[in-house]
Image 1 (cartoon, rainbow, N blue to C red):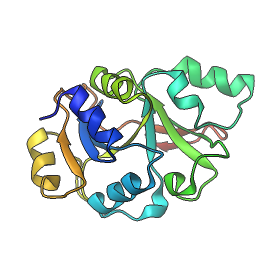
Image 2: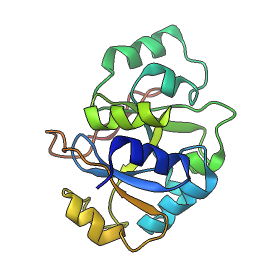
Image 3: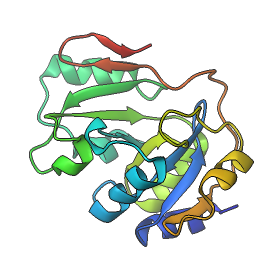
Amino acid sequence: MLSVVQAANALQAGKVVAYPTEAVYGLGCDPMNEQSVADIWQLKQRPQGMGLIVVGSNWQQLIAYMSPLSDFQQATLVSSWPDALTWIVPVATDVPLWLTGGRDTIALRWTKHPDVCALCDAFGGAVVSTSANTHGQPPCLHAACVEQTFATQSAFAGVLMGALGVDDRPTPIRDLLTGAWVRT
């Protein structure tokens, strides 16, 4: 089990860590490190074109990933965050395609989960957040499941100590431009 400082140092070194989120364990890495993102795909055995969620502990950690928003769009995000809600928003032009799966949007969440906030703050920015599981398998709900699934992989640094939130399923996802629910 990793402390917050150890997990943040692992992220800065280009490793993947697991951490408790609102409902399931997540895998995270530095979203701007191409090799780390590739390691997430490899660990999960997931097709790269699916895109990834980026989670932050505050507005400043997320704004760099967004294209300029209208006042209404910004107010919509701010009024619903921080919370266990992921928004698909127009992506900033300097965000790499390998993070978005080639889309012109990106999925972002401003979390209030204390362990995720502590990790983002210690790392110094937002991190990738995708469920800790191999593609097509249920997400891990216990640190032991994460260790059993990923511990033998060289890109995996370990599991952040902490506790899952109280949600009973992964966060809902909503499209900011259309208002459509992508995942409820």
